Image (cartoon, rainbow, N blue to C red; front, side, top):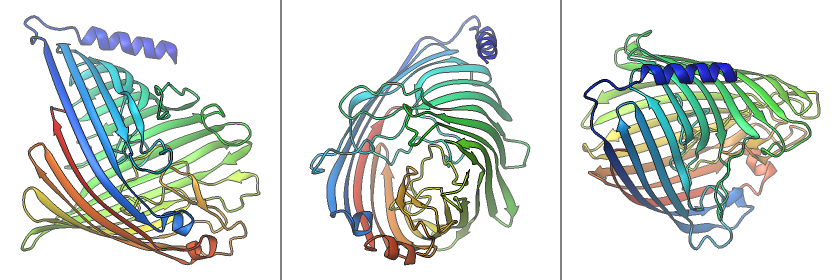
Length: 420
């Protein structure tokens, strides 16, 4: 593996030598400041007190291009949750830290090498993403080797998710890593995309694995986005998994499919409907693991706007209507409903941790349904938005938790300058 990395890096450097008359040096600065006020009722379905607090996030970054084939990038981020009432979790608070800092060698077309800390998003971010909705987002210590062409991208990657340490520097956490290949073909399907990937997720106990032994999961999957005719568009992604979770053999799978179409009414409206599935473990006391490993996705909006659930042990159906009120103003109406794939496995939250469980499988499968309405307005560097979401608890939540309905409300504003 090391020989392959070194050989590919050498090829990237050789192919990226600057021609005569290269572009002059270039320096780009970018800035973001965002505030959001959140209020939640029925927190943890009634187990925790209601909450309301503001969130603040500030980013300052710079990109330096000494040559057309070299880029240095750095991004500082400060995230705060004042008045939270107790030490805020790492999704809300991370005092001044290095969010990104990397070196990229290569041009827009041809071989390239990227080394350092970076926010990474692949595909529709269902497995690997940097959720910008979170106050701290997510970043990775990474090595990425790619060969880019107008019609395709070949990529070999090694990623280690950075664990947030709210009051100190976020150090590398190499005991939790994802590596493999992720490839995109843009002209294989007319007006569509085809992606395929082979990935490996390794995690030991220092890296965060909770249990004896370690985690070693192999993922093989593909994603297709294609037009269907008459204005319809289809998106499909399927993933299979093998490997081990602790001492158990691991076999799991997940599926996503979506159909959307824009309709010209008084205002343009895009209608979409989708179905998502991720397997669970049928017998938690047995010798096989079947709970899908969702890796590190950007799950915002994928299972409801309140962001309560993740892509593990779940069936989910969702509809979304996007109304273009003006060029700058959009209104969204969303509905979704969820069921457990295995009644004996847990219901999991967005980061993939258990929320509730019925070990005997006697609490039913129906989790609940959620109705959401939210809006965004963008004008130049300024952005405003607000939203409300309500989850109506189903049989499973009523029998395994206090069963309170969840209400989520927020307003936000932000300003950003620069090319990022």
